[in-house]
Structure formats: C-alpha cells, structure tokens
Image (cartoon, rainbow, N blue to C red; front, side, top):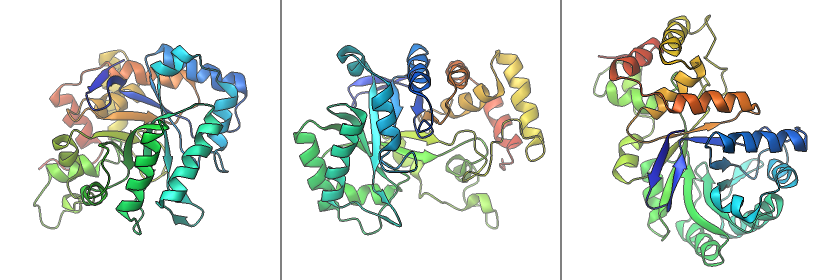
Length: 309
C-alpha cells in the first residue's frame, strides 16, 4: 500500500480510503470483516458522513455497533466524517456543526474524530460561525483536524478569513472518465473546446501549492453516479482496451489500474473506495503500488476521451 507523509496531519496516511456509505444493510460480521480486511491491506483512513445510510448517522451507528476497536487499534486509524448537508438545504451554522459531531461520536462509539470535513459548500456560509464550531470542537478534543469537500479555492480562502485551524483535506469527485480537474489544465486557453472550461478555478494547483490533500470519491464512476466505466465496453471501448492491457502488464486488475492512474499524479491524491467487498479493497491496494509511466498515464487519459493538444 502506497502511503503519503502529511506533516500537518502528524502521521502517514494510506493512499486508499475506505468509504463507509454503503454498510447500512450489512450484517455486523460483514462490516467487521470489511474493515479489518482493509486494515490488513494497509488502509488506515475510514470515511463517514452524518447523512450516509438513508437516515442521519445510520452508517456511523452500524460501524459503531459492528466494529469493536481496542484503544491501540483506534490510535492506529483515522476516522473522518462530514457535516453540513440537511434535507433540502446546507447548514454550516455553528450549532449544527457542533451538535452533529456530538451525534456522530455517539454513533461511532469513539471519543474523537481524526478529521471533520464540511460536506459540499454552503453558499450562506458565515466563516465566523464555522470558526466558532471548529474552535469549540478542537479545544474539547472532539476533532483533531479539519477539511472540506467539493470546495473551490475561493470558497476555501473565504473560510480561512476566520477559521484558524489548517484545512488539510478536500474530497472531490475524480476518476479516469471524470477528470475535469486534470483535463482542463492540459487544454487551457483553447477557444471552443469544452474541456478548456475551468470548473473548479484551479483547484489542483491550489491544493499542491497549499499542501492540501485531495481525496477522490467515485474513482470508478463515469460521471455523477452515471455508472462504472471499468468493464463498460459499450460506452468506453478504447479505455477498457488500455485498462486490460496495462492490467496484464502490471499484474493487477483493470480497477487496480484505474486506482494507479489517480495515485500516479504527484499531487498525492487519496482514492476513496465505496465498496462493501474486501476483494475490491485488495485490488485497489495492489493498484496503489503500480507506478505508471508518463506514457501509460497519458494513454489512459486519451483513451478516456480527454483531448491532448
């Protein structure tokens, strides 16, 4: 398992993050086996959100019920959760952030979160409210580190006008077939080309400049929950041909190559898996160790339909 050293975080983190959004209907033994299997493969970051599971804190509660971590095991892993999405609106008020974290801690059966992310931007955000919540949670030892999800550089800078803690993570949608973050920069300044339109205001470069770790969610999705591209030869024939070829070359699965493509980028991006199968975690872990050449990386890029001027 490839790992990244994050000085601001105080520990090395795995390049693979295990997302827990689909565990609500699993048996306790299945959840425990999934988590411990991931830990055995070197995963040390687990991703939650208060909204996962169809009702508030459902997946967090299922995790807390199913996985009994010893004190030593708890210190070896990072548990992160997210806050801010409510039914029909977003809410970054101090009271909602603080109360939701308390509820998450109770559901997860832990005393602290290693990371709290703001879950999608709230256009009504008042940075002073967020700062008050973060200060209270940090001082109480309930949250050790903070970040955001799906935020642009400008939105992050706005938060930083009041928030004192470093914002060290940003979780964003990214995959081979959904890569405007990479593709726009490659084709910058080309009039009339859809790929040249900036959709995140230079987030990739901003993150590298500010040592902010990106976490890629939906790493196998073609779009916004538009279906998986791996194995879809009807929509992505050229891409799957290259995936299969490189999988054979490197001794991993095509899904492993899709993971390797994200991790190959020098921005040190983490890949968030939403799987409930230990075998998928093993495939991703193997892919994390593959070092694609520049030629291989760009072959995949163009096979996915992105323009290389």
